[in-house]
Each structure stands twice: as C-alpha cells, then as structure tokens.
Image 1 (tube, helix red, strand yellow):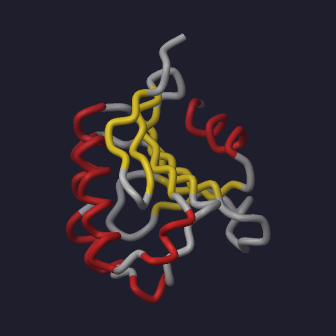
Image 2: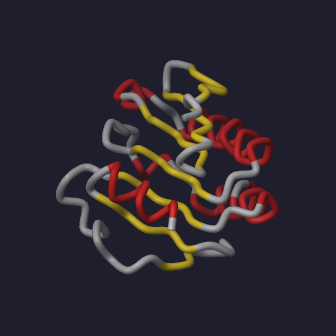
Length: 134
C-alpha cells in the first residue's frame, strides 16, 4: 500500500496524490468561508499542476467542508483555464464528495462543459473512490 502524498497544503485545503486510489484529490477546509474568487482560482491552478504531474486517471474533490460563497466562482474561467489542463493530463473521471442533501448526489455521471471526462457527485468518499477505480 502506498501512502497518500500531500503535494500542497495551505489555509484553504490540501492537494493529495492517492496512487492506490488512482486519483489526485482536493480536500477543502472550512476556512474556505473566507476564500475569495481569486484565492479559489489560484488553488485550482495548483491542483491542476498536481493533476498534470501525477498523471493519474481520477480527480476527487472532497467538498464536505467547502464554505466559500459559490457566487464568487467563475465557471467560465475554470472552463477556459483549468479543464483543458485536466483533459491534457488524461483525466478519465472526476468525482465530488458533497454535503448531505446536495441535489446532484447520485445523479448519473455527465460530461460537463469542455471536459473530456464524466463528473459524478457522491454523498460518501467510499462511493466516490469506488466509482473512480472502476
């Protein structure tokens, strides 16, 4: 068993390489309640570098503790600047672990925006990792 490797950690979260689970992960912290849109974009750039460097087929975002106001996100910026990097890195699946009650949990995986891979939403980490590893 290979231990997970934390490639980046700051006040907002961690970027982790999980070779045994075939994925790179963002684990957000509840301090994201103070996060700006600029901070969010910078963190995604770091994570994209970790995805590129690791070359693993899965992406995982543990958003259970994510508290940033989603109105501060620019999905257009993410689609233009981050998703192409995930595509080029060869991501095959992207999973989110979400807080209970999020409507997309359990919906069929779908390709979102310019992604070349499906994204799915889960209520448990185990379910997300099981889906990524298949």
